[in-house]
Amino acid sequence: MSADPSRLAAWLRCPVCEADLEPVDRLTLGCVNGHRHDVNKRGYVSLLGGGTKHLGDTAEMLDARDLVLEGGAYSPIADAVAASAVGTRVLDAGAGTGHYLRAALSALPDALGLAMDLSPQAVARAVRSSDRVDGLVADTWRPLPVRSDTADTVLDVFAPRNLPEFHRVLRSGGTLVVVVPRADHLGSLRAAGTMLDIPSDKADDVIAAAEPLYALLAREPVAYDLALTPPLREALAGMGPSARHAAAGAAVPADIGATRVSVDVLRFTRR
Image 1 (cartoon, rainbow, N blue to C red):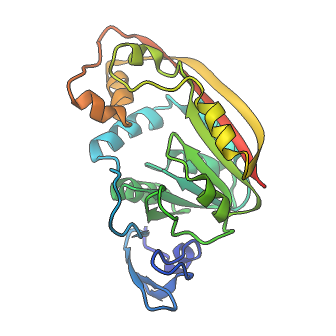
Image 2: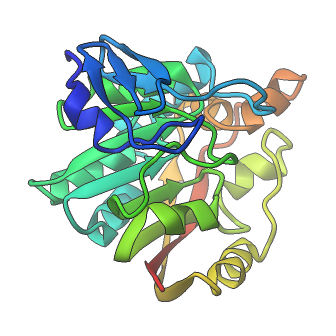
């Protein structure tokens, strides 16, 4: 899609001085203090700057994620995320290819979305996937180059969480949707040593960390058995942080025919 600089700028603030960004021309955003940021013609902008210590997903990891998500393996999770989203402006922090953001937008026909991810390749795919999605390359761990009080819903699905910044960008009464794996998530693959372990109390930790800023509205477990084909086995191991672990030498056993998908979908409201 072609960039809509006005629509994109309406989400954003300058990462240098925190002033609101506005279109300067078709492919440039700027602030009143003279800082300028180039917009990719596909409809996204990088406001990453220097100094990040984190790595974005590679093309191979994104291909694996597409195979899993677009093939429907995580559709019950996407359905739960979509049912939790509200309003007309949805920010997906750690959006990847935009699968969960598109699910939310499908339930909110008047809404627009901002796909934010550390990987430019991921953001490009997310923007390309829907004419209702703008894109932002940024690091979730740093102050977000997003205007305060601008999102009705923030999605965080299997992604890093910056709870104070999510609180800032949410409108009063806005909704934060967080999806975290449970200890038995993809257990047969983890038992084989091809994926990283999950803390047993991850959802409890998120709820405790969020309590000063958010009120918990719902904790919904989503769990089901998933039949595995050889390509799906490889893709599940290759689409997330475990991909780097697997690349170090661990192979996915060929005899694992099924696994358990098990997550908590947490819905909070901003205090």
